[in-house]
Image (cartoon, rainbow, N blue to C red):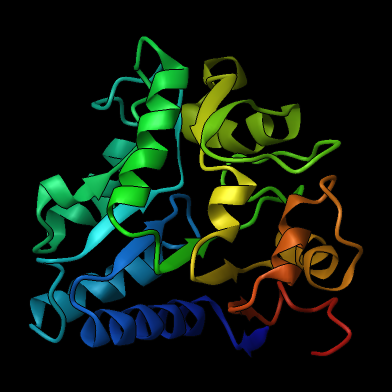
Length: 244
């Protein structure tokens, strides 16, 4: 594991963007796993600026998003499809056909999950997966459980996650109760992983994920077993780490 504790969110965003840019320059056909949420927004903005300055190109890059709410149309302001196009894809030179996001409106969810895994396999697997972490230690929508999940699947969201995400929906009863997410097995099969976290609210989850026991009750703890893990946190998120 490579751990980087930076001063603040701006430095975190810059460090993450620099790592992605280096990989894209090294391999223009790289396959990226991408997250949503507030944490990667600064990274996306920096990558957009790099693209506009023609320092990097995404024309041959293939992307797979971690997850999507079930039951939200793509045009819904809270769908992760809309999030990615509003905050990243529409501002860079990526080819639309090279972007992949689970279809939360699929009639047959199990079939959609199987097809998503097949698309990842056809692309040759994911070279770099970028992750955020939930306050309860979830990665993607893999919630605390009694066992680690497998490949892409449908998941029931915990009340903790529903409450945390309610700020985006305006009311807790508007938050979907189910989602489609890459599983722990899908994530661990990625060749490289970069975990990002900022703010005091993530400090306990980061502490447990990196220094606690490996347990499905804290899903991110499984990342300790990955052969190529980079962790970038700001001082607040890393404040409880013994190695800070």
